[in-house]
Image (cartoon, rainbow over all chains, first blue to last red; front, side, top):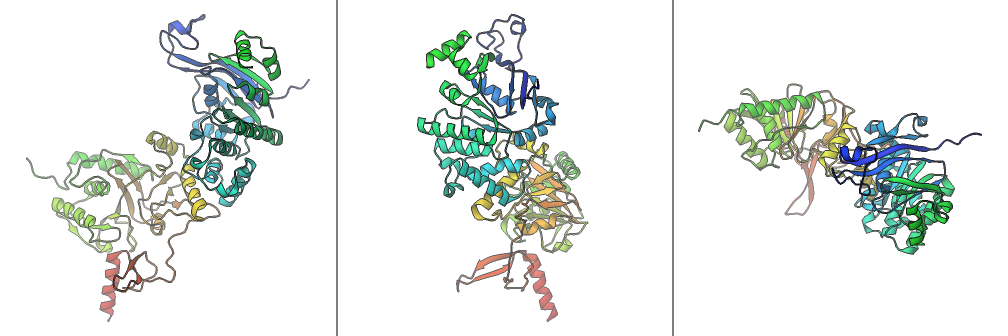
Length: 279
Length: 281
């Protein structure tokens, strides 16, 4: 049987804040959640491994502080990982560990293979620059130096995310939260990246706007066959979007499987609690 | 209290500035940090350029100081006075006679020679500052040759005004490596830095940076494929005094008639042309 090659493989990714001590580096270390009470080291991600396949949406759920966002930031190189390996099939055919590449190469990967939508649009957008420029930024970074080309691309993306053309040259600071989020999605897609990272994109939006943004994400995935990692603490969002789901707790993956499986028949004690308390 | 040293600054300070200049020349367009001494004029009034001038000037130098094309405006006159008081060197307004030219926001119309040095005063040396406030990050961008921010500025201007609206301090790529602010000279002067015969030095006193473009260095103004770099156009406009049209012009209003007229911005060049005309008669 032929095995499909994943577009992204993460192996043993760990991220800690602090140096660690003899207490917490011991085999059967006793941590308070993900925190060492002796040396105050925070173990944000502990030996996280997973695969992402072409065209699928992978959901990551977990409570605040479970390491979801740290994982996303590590994948987008906003944070440097403490240890671990990552392989992208679209980068050197998956032969090189992306976390040990030079910062120029990381920037290149970021600008051509990855797209990121942050929970807070302030992180992903330049609020004083026009929406057009915000979307063009990623294309400029990838080496495009043709204004008309980038303008056309930005316009078509803005139309795609349903921002009216007459507001395309306005700065995102004048936009509503939902519109800002849609501009962010357009920006993340500007270079046709094979992988899109979405970090709590609907948190803080009202329900009808949430539905709009979710619809948009789903349609992008269907039309363009982009792989996505969706982080959310909202199980309804995960249920609607994700094909497979990972459950994180205290920086570790405690359960993973098909979304329906995980939500309908949770195995881990924490997942059971999570599912039954929210549904 | 001992006497004021030659060229005001003590030898140690001058040596440090010269070292920064040498490093700047060795890495064209790279901003070299330096200590930036206190001076009798306030930071932001040309102290960077002044320190470069003071560190370089010798007894046989002839100094010219320009402030936006004029030899007689306050900033130029005061800097000239300070340097002559502390060094006793000759000053001139003729570009051709000077060995050292300190300038604020203009490169003279008369082409500079290989035996001359141009010192430009810089208010903001960092071309990426408007995009990124953090010096830590901009330094990293330079190290990685990550200049999309500089292009993004120009792109935003094109989106808003359908043309680049950067009138002065239009960013350039030096020697194919570093993007640099050429100090607030008009775009008109940018091509003069490219393959210049003279050494061009940049001093930013408040920001504590020195950088340089050595002679015969490639200097390219940033542009897009479909929006090439253009200098200011003065089509159909001529200097009222000299009739020149291939120079950078100032737009003025006649206060009596309310009529708009143009004069050559480089006053010493204008005077020279006028004297030639008188002599010809």
